Length: 106
Image (cartoon, rainbow, N blue to C red):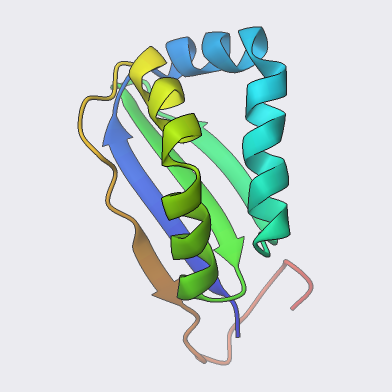
């Protein structure tokens, strides 16, 4: 079963959007590499109080770890552009069977 991976960090969501708009090729190269490693879904989210969150779905933890290790040189400059100075620590979430699923094709 797939895993949800979240990364949460302090940064400037607006600067991240500006960087992404100015480096579409770089952003596409990262997502292309992620897809080659098995990425199922991906989104960035930002909060008004200066937090950025990445929410991904991957086939398993090892797929994400291989992607992240291979792409540190691409991801680092993007994070720096958003004012993020600490390396994000991924959290891996495994679905619990609670018999109350709703939405997302449940």
